[in-house]
Length: 480
Ligand code: ADP
Ligand code: ADP
Ligand code: MG
Image (cartoon, rainbow, N blue to C red):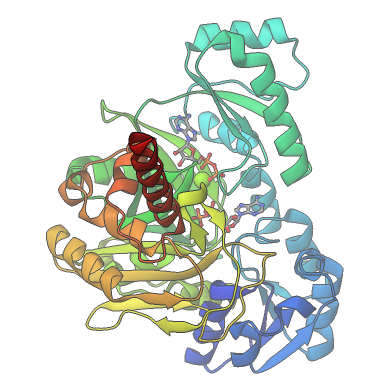
């Protein structure tokens, strides 16, 4: 049995896990680095320990984290998402120290953490994968180009160890292959310390559909329906919807069975996600498996009435999953919008600073998962996610209305956020219709920006000043 959990993370996900601990009457332990001492997770945990002066190092150091857990008598570690959540060495170190890692077995993390190995395992088990190659690092450029011609342009180069939308390069023409390959390798090395790169066919205008998996330590595995995560920018999700508003029940069923088969093929346990790309012929392909809780898990919780973090903890404690597939009966629709501190007018650069006013949206079926509060100073060192707004309703039209209402109500003062941009998406015809693909945001960026009504829009103000100045100049010139 687990009694005390150390959360090896920060921000909203650390807060989310601490809340699950409270709900289960378990003790929670926060860790934090010095510049992060004011973060909400530090304030609300039962205990909190500093793990170093540098902003990131302590969150990424398995030794310090395991030592802290042992010292304070924690018997389990929850890794959250990002940081060390999909790191084999960390999971192994936790287990070797006699503690419980709240996630799948380390060997499963190792296999699925490498997209290339995951693709190989899936193909071997009859799961459809995106057509592509194995790792290309030992191939000549001529050979790489030959593969691309065989697959057919456009193709996409991907880092085997990639995540968070990084280490991905689309290649539309052979002339760009060499530079894209080198750039992809460099990015992979910088971000993931692993320069292994492989190639896939670029599925044009796909939908990103993923299935939430739950498995126990005894081989019972089910899925908790799908999420549509096609609203993305730079391969990163911005808005997620459960269930997908644009697939048939029949396709949903087939994809769900395939997702469970994929998880079974690797002996999966705990919470995880099988990600698919769906093309315009309704053919779908395995893309990757995330071996952790996802940012967007809340929408699945809302439609299935399941607390996924509580489930993670209970499964890790050795409980049998008493749910069967037929017990999972989703109700209605839920949407999550990721509210980040970014300036949409300046290419989404992060906007750290002090929050001078905070008025999260409220009301029936509106949930906000966040770690911020009034006077909180957002440090510049971490992810720009400030809050996840999650709304729920009985039908798709109604849930989009609710999203729009909640975004209008949600006010964060002192820093620029993407709330007005999210509102513009929620009002767009395509979003309301429920049919869009992963290229929607990028290819309609200007249109969405034009519809973004941002009271804190310095860009527009600049434009207005420029327009006023040029009007005056014109008048002066005309008078001359
Ligand atoms: P990450 O680990 O960064 O999440 P993924 O492999 O899941 O990387 O891909 C992230 C996103 O990139 C996908 O959701 C999709 O929008 C896009 N993408 C990835 N592979 C392909 C592909 N073969 N064709 C088209 N888009 C792709
Ligand atoms: P999800 O599928 O849960 O939405 P994302 O791919 O958007 O996950 O990533 C979740 C968070 O974790 C983001 O903050 C992202 O920057 C970070 N992240 C994901 N994968 C990695 C990785 N391999 N290394 C570092 N950070 C990562
Ligand atoms: Mg992914």
